[in-house]
Length: 313
Image 1 (cartoon, rainbow, N blue to C red):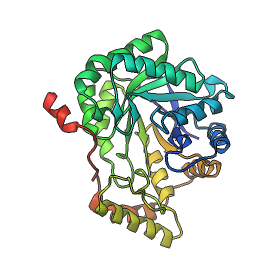
Image 2 (tube, helix red, strand yellow):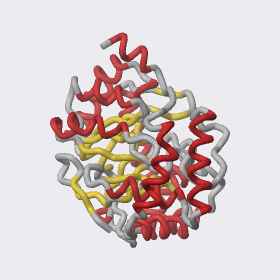
Image 3 (cartoon, rainbow, N blue to C red):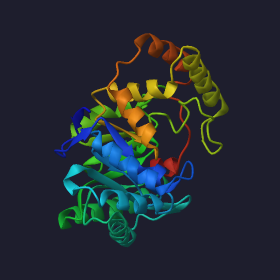
């Protein structure tokens, strides 16, 4: 496993990191013992960053993860969780709720601190509340030692630009913007470098678009995006390969991207994902797939109240 620096935090993170959302039975019902074993397998094979949230499985993911990591020395992994999102449409970025949230998370995770705390999907909140209450309480929690570093997560890239131009963040988590079909995250790199802010890239499979498996009904991508991604998956299959493998390799090979999160509760899958990162990417296949995906390059979908953010700023 290779490691890269996470901004100015001093942390060296594995290029492939573990997203614990699957432990909350978010994508399918999981066997808890298998989920715990998956976490242990990830760490045993060099993954050192684990990301979770109270939202995943409505606290189930944190609870299962807590059972997994209590058996592992605390210095063997970097733990990231979130605050602010607690349900499909339940958001609260107030000072008191964030303070309560981290205490609840620490209890479920069976630890006395987290390395990173992120405000979760901030595009759904009020930027005034996030800037006046959310960020200051993160700064307070860092001073108190409950967290080592802090930041924000979300889908629209504009939210990071807005926040970073008003305050300092240790890290951000962006998803679905550095993958085979969307590399728009690269536009944010100069600002992140200027601010010395760490970057966590999530969802190299674009929430299942870049896979041979059927795309979930809840996926917000347009039918056009779904169709083109399916064509890419079928092309890989015809050529004896796997679009998911290509997608993960593509995301981790760029040294500008410190780490990429993948989520699974399967020991077999995490072993396979790690193995793929150590293999050389098939450049000919990659170029063909990028050609297929070209019509939807950097095409995304709406999320949250970005228009409200733009009006306020």
